[in-house]
Image (cartoon, rainbow, N blue to C red; front, side, top):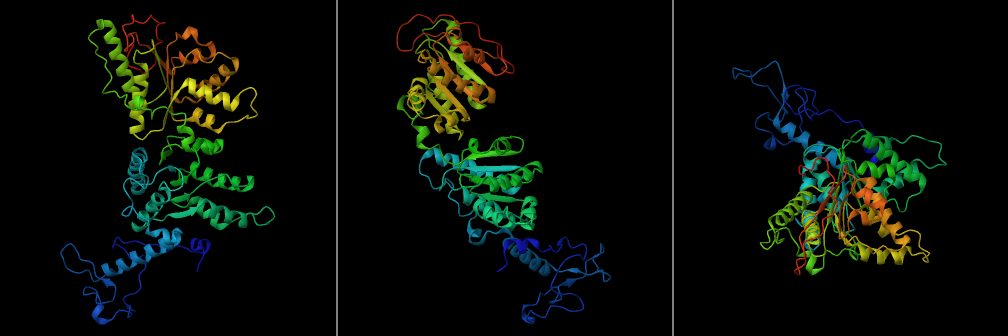
Length: 474
């Protein structure tokens, strides 16, 4: 059996099925017709010669020209598909198609099924017109490989080349071909894969790679990114676990799209409060923004907060800060944003700040020997983070420092963030509050409604919210 490098090393025979010229490969010709067909099986149009005379505008045959018959073009297409199938390296994976995919994937929980359905729609679009990078992220069993192979098989069935390789398979080849002790510095397979029209790299994971093999893999990805070559990557890694360059490539919205196929692991869920019965039922539809007992100006303020929260949920960008008394509705709006995003298949984490501090004290406490916490790193880099009840809980200088690291990272990375607090911004540490009021990223809104749960007087007036660019409301 030919290996992939031998197959890719062969020259392709130009194929043109337009029927307008004769630079087409076929098995027979006018002088030496293909005699492999039995007379009974011969095409009734060309009688087995594989050629026909095209018709002139008058409808008469043009006896000065010969073009391949339709039966020859069918054979050409079959041979081309078989050739592409061999080049693809799919092997037994050629049976994984869109037709035999489960529409909701194999996970039974509603969130994962919704994420899979969203991914399936995007993957179909990519298969029809591959452009840029598509990254499928999720744990083992989330359906990444089936989706990736379905793309390759669809492209091949339509006559387009695609190569499928697992990252492990590619790295094994690279180690053999580019071993540091080997004198040869050129590998034909590696060079061809770098420029293949569609590369599908399955199960990309850096955990078991050496610095040298990782460098070769990075070289491949850098080349394809710079050339804007269509590439589909599947991985069980979080995007932030990639090196800086590749994480930057994957997060480049002009070239790459990342699809999460399954909700975050239970370690992150342990801090996510959105599954609590009260919070998961807080939706925009059941937020009472027209309480008749309120003065008109207070009710208008509450309605505006509802509108701002809905706008943020539709397109989460920048920061949204809700201030107000306990019970004024700010947590309901923050939870409604989170529930809307989760139902839309977007990555979101809702954390009550005191719970976060409990985790940080256990992981990073002054007496702890732990200097790094992977969960904290995930929280810092989550697509949308909602911090509820940002208050006076961080009394110690150590706790202040950890929260500042979180806030500062998300500020510098311009990551979508929602914060609720019962404090005026003057009561929050200056290096944190100064980022919250930055009009280039943040909208601060003071909810002046009283506590829903009791007859408490209207909330004290907070400092005026800063004007924010592109908000459309002042």
